Length: 188
Image (tube, rainbow, N blue to C red):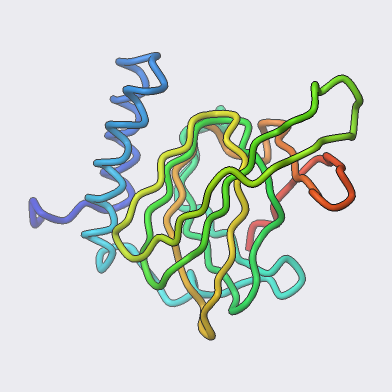
């Protein structure tokens, strides 16, 4: 087997090693950033046509590529329909995303309320980044962002999480209505 190919099985093995050897989130994110770059550079080994399929109602497709039995270390290929994306949301865990095919706009948000009212959240925009193929975005637990595909074609990114996001109790936010609600993904 070619030593340069860094497929999903190899990525998962490295993720297990990194996370078992180190409880520090900052160090994990730094190492996983490099692993994500390696996986993106070897996309020809794992990127398949079906990973461009998306759920029309959801606006994107989530394709599970790896998950540990205890729901940790989840890896997804996510396809984004043209002119679609997500509301602001958190992940309930750390996240690393690398661009695979096409640009995606990420907007970052900060909560400005005191979190004392269940279901209520006040958000303010805190930044923006359009990332393209091979760009890596590392987000500590608690980061709130939204994603949008501004192109006229499906884009794809590789997402790596410390835990499968449907098992973290994460939230989605509506800045206009000032609401916080549970956020679960449909896996395609």
